[in-house]
Length: 401
Image 1 (tube, rainbow, N blue to C red):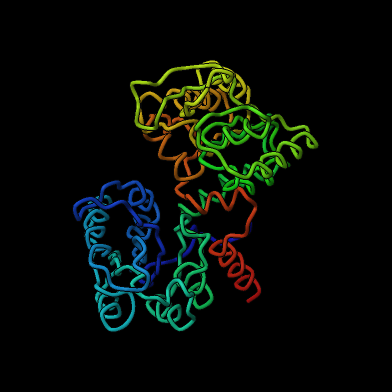
Image 2 (cartoon, rainbow, N blue to C red):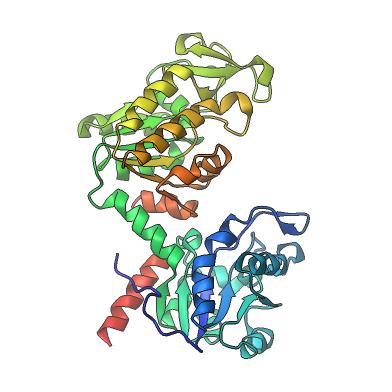
């Protein structure tokens, strides 16, 4: 990937339009989790200190092109100001006279957050006229929103056709970290993968199977692989169609890649019957459901992970949100942390994986925790991310001038 970054650019006095991903959880009209706001601090703080006139774009939720007051970014402006330790103005629209007036008031070092770009249907349609209206607010475009890089929207892709475009520090860090998984990763390379369904991550398996030495598999998808091998998984969540799992098993065999599957499990009679949780070997699942990998499996997975030199954690091993079913994810998280301390590169990718890493306390021990959910997944699938492709295109065009 070849793209330009903020580093070395003279931005003083320039209007810099920055696309951030401030799509944060809201609770009672306030920010519930500031993680994405905190992730934006490096880029926005740098622009402030360099004397740029910073215009921040973001979306919040899915208003589907309509003005939804509950999805206004106004509360986010206050949280962003607190995170930066500096005032952040707010404008009630992202284009037109209101936005233009707000930008005109900026002085060197000032920051304004514009209203939710998805209040306009033209945003998700990547309407060229809307993209030009956004571009008219700035002299330079910075894409710092890796979490939306897989969307070809006006504020992530279209605007880069109308302004000089570079990557922000968060975008740069994300792409550099994830690139280590694709370009000559150190071996052994192990992918700890969980999640509900195999069919949702066929692309991840297919792309990474060319690079990894093994997968350690948990979550609902492990049930599907077990069922594909003839194991009775009782009432456990699994894919109805077992063919994708069988195809992945065959491909792994052809490539010499090991698929580690559970030997025991934590089961219960129902999802919310925590008091009935118990550990059993696979042969004793019966009519119960699997909700976590068992302790023997967790120890075996941890042994594989501690020997790895490159690790991607792409999904919890069980229903970690509930106390009886989080031990599997905790044990492998500790193993990844130990491997990282010993010199391995560890990348946490995907929304559920990142949430589990933070919840169980091992996020800070990882080399990198991605802020992208769908974007990280599509990157691991080997797909082209429109937001990144736009930066690469802009770099080629600017180098040709």
